[in-house]
Image: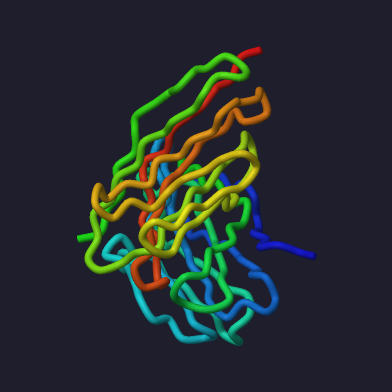
Length: 114
Length: 111
């Protein structure tokens, strides 16, 4: 049984650079979510996909952020022109269906912008 | 709007002590409620959940009851162990499209 995986686990980048993170959800899950977690806070919702369709985006997702899930399987989150305020843990989660089902989280990608 | 308020930590308890972590929520309608746990260096794991009023979620000796009248979902355990040391997050989901998390409560259990 493989859970949600994320790559890379850690990323250090210089301000102004672009970064891309990948998430592989649990294989039969059709819903995929991205969250951001900063130190001492709970995860904050960024966006979610049902299959390949991006159905909801948070206002936290500025124009520098873009997420894709081209074939309804893995997803990528790209941050362009990174800023120091983007430093955080980026979490991916997946679920089987909407409503009452719990979300299963990956280990996260820790981004540090210097 | 939807939000979750958690008891602030950190909480330090001796082994075998009783644990309560308070969680209250604000939501329209009837949300599902969850407790997630994050062990050091690991991702969030579902601990327990409740989907309707008066439901009790339980797992690994932890319990929480969905109280609509007080909009609460307090986490309890009768006898904590050192291995329970972690950060605990209360969360709600209204539509399943996103979760709203509390800020987390850090628990340290000392032998």
